[in-house]
Length: 166
Image 1: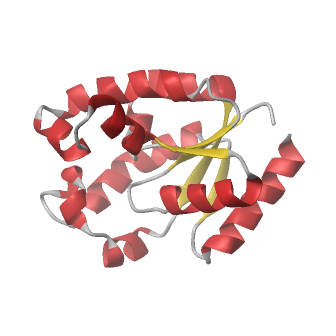
Image 2: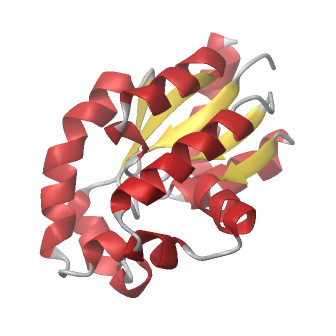
């Protein structure tokens, strides 16, 4: 394979779950960008956000530059990666970008907000983030997968898509 598979979407949409399962089935390395950032900077995403979202976004861009050169990889990005055009240009260079679009009510019903710094204000913030970011996910995605099925079905759908495109 000559490209990465980059998964984008709102927090809680299933990027990491789908990415790990896709990695297992395809044999392609999996990188969770948030985990990569935590290891690289030896801290948690929550701690970084205490310094400000701008600080996190700069770290995110640097990390993205590093991981996007590991071809092929499956990269699970953070939900806000689409907020910086530079990030999306980095991904477009070496990746097929897939928007994992899970119904927002499903996310709201089962997300644990204690691990999500941007949801400190409560679940209603999830809806406003989705409304703000949805047009950007659509703009930057090469493909969209609706996450309203079991993980295996979604992985099979992505595998079929990869075979058709590459």
